[in-house]
Amino acid sequence: MASAELIKRLEDTIENIPDFPIPGIQFKDISPIFLDPKLYEDVIADLAAKSKGKVDAVCGIESRGYLFGIAIAVALEVPFILIRKAGKLPPPVISEKYDLEYGSATIETREGQIKPGQRVLIHDDLLATGGTTEAAAKLVEKQGATVSQFSFLIGLKGLNGDEKLKKFGAEVYHILEY
Image 1 (spheres, rainbow, N blue to C red):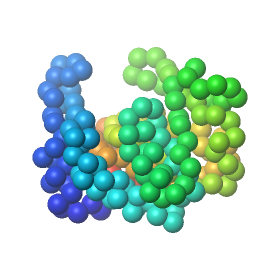
Image 2 (cartoon, one colour):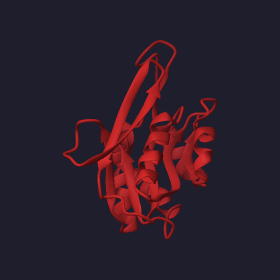
Image 3 (cartoon, rainbow, N blue to C red):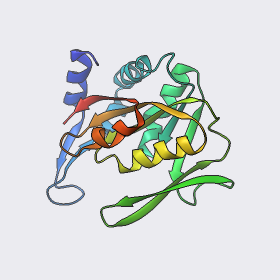
Image 4 (cartoon, rainbow, N blue to C red):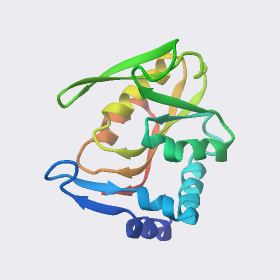
């Protein structure tokens, strides 16, 4: 678990934007974190410490999962693998379709970048309902690797994202919970 000091610094930094992008949503704007290099460094240190020695690669989910995911991979000295929206990566790709509230979407990763047997950390900035993260985990498993951890800056209570990810048997970690 993150230190009380780091949690307080993040809570003082992240801005709550009411009614964005639609009425009733309380948007958590993480962009002020990037104005404070020391805070960003401390977030990376916390996230990387949870994974040290436990993963062989980090997958980041487009696009905000890249903001911390790349730095986590660098800190752990392991590869970073992009998970992107369909059509954004050159072939060959592995795809996974998943349902949204209204319709569906597809995410992809380059074939061969995730190796069979690897222990993978999947990182994104925020865990809400867990649909995109669940699809990312299925992408990892399709390639013979194991999801050993999920990490997030923020977890949203009451949306059951943690519950959706339990079936993968992997540790789920988020620094903040709202």
